Length: 123
Image (cartoon, rainbow, N blue to C red; front, side):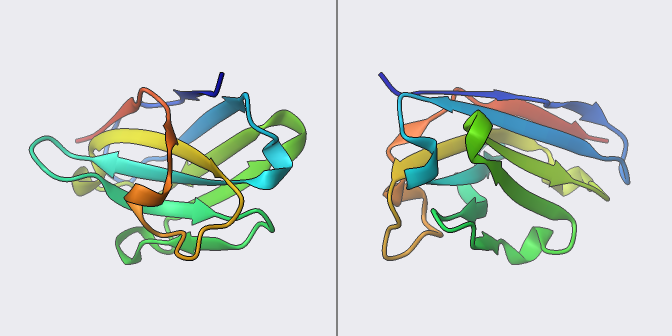
């Protein structure tokens, strides 16, 4: 049974920082790609950052230089460090995982396992 649980969301003022964490169970942590996604109210879900099996990362242009994705295989965890937050970063943030490396990592539809989401509000 695959389970992902996000934590670390909350409310911050513009310019502040948050650190999101996601613990993954039910998959071999060293053999999965993981990603962070967000969905503002009334909008489609979008990729924020992703990390493949080898640790190579991709980050959306809108958050590049402000958000950093990392993984800890020993603890089956993927983290999203967010700094210099802006009101437009407000959304529900989801982590996702899938076995192996897909041909294109930076897509919502290549990930099959999702967490329930955590809310980030920047005012």
